[in-house]
Amino acid sequence: MAFPTAVNDQITDAVTQSNVKVLGDAPAMAMGAIYQSLAHSTGILYENATSAQQQLAISAQAATNQGVIQLYSVDTMAGAVSTAKVAQSDVPDTMLALLTALKATRF
Image (tube, rainbow, N blue to C red; front, side, top):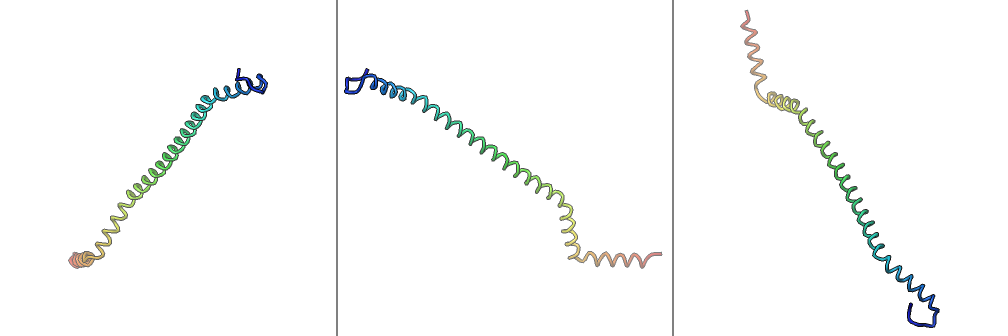
């Protein structure tokens, strides 16, 4: 029971009990808010991890694609480079002269 006042004792007891109930519920409400915040943070953590995995998978596919493209273009590039080197040298003229000489000495 509260201190004697001009207000009815039952009213002051009811208000006091309500205040005590609020104070009693405060730790539970605080823990509930902490748990809710923790669950939200954990959800965001998993969302970010999933997004990072998706981006890494896309990067891995792109890198694999580039590697395959380079593997398939090795012969083509090597042929193009060797053709360009042969075209810039005097090998075609020498080969034509040899072919002419072979045809001339044919029996």
